[in-house]
Image (tube, one colour):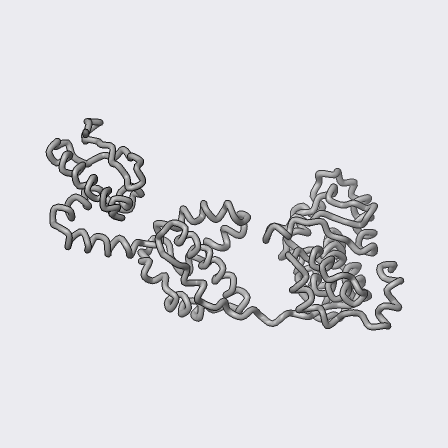
Length: 360
């Protein structure tokens, strides 16, 4: 039975699952209200998706009633239109869903990558979220294979969300092969050149470089370290990585690097909660690194990320366990370490020199 609230009549509409939902009927005419209640009861008995669309806010009750009056053909047309919903209406709820599964930074990157596929304020029907269309869109991206793989991951995440919300029955990205990753980058320096490179830089970049080169820590995590993250008794540090759950970890730091970090901390008198590199950016660290490379005559193509390669190759050559290397790099397991660095397993000469490692 409908009741008056404000300008319109309201009613409890029974849903196919047995629950009731209070809805405005959009009219103050009791005869029309009774007819709308009757329509809702019939649609509920038929478990019609049109009623669910009203409940979820994707269809106006008045529009449904107008089509109801025009008969089944009009209702079929309405169902077809609703089946090709605007994907933009789901982006906001996908972001909320996503932030419960990945860190904030990754969620923001995923949103930017999805916006290439689904521009803001542009109607993109669900029919365009197809295997063929997605494959074509991936091939149009003007980026490297590894970057295209990130787009694939972002779009696939959105597809998984749409499946969970019953918008689509299956995720078409599962039938679209992810682009091939870039060839593994293998530019690295030996320990002597690494130490020269570290000591050629002014503070705090000298210590920052020592931490990265001596642990394989990524620049984003290295810039977040606090004085209290270091354990000088066992040469370890916490790495506050955020790319995935394995990136927030404890890493081993080579003794030569830990010695330089200790010097820096002693000279600056930092408290345990103080960040080691406040105000330092990755861009500025790269500029200083490039200047040092030029001054030393080392390869200018060497980047901040290449420190991870130098560390991994050095560890592999001296016979470190691949899983331990993977832990330092923040990988889930040793598979990638073995795939990229397995060929650097130690020779007899490397093993004979291992006893002197890290004493420089």
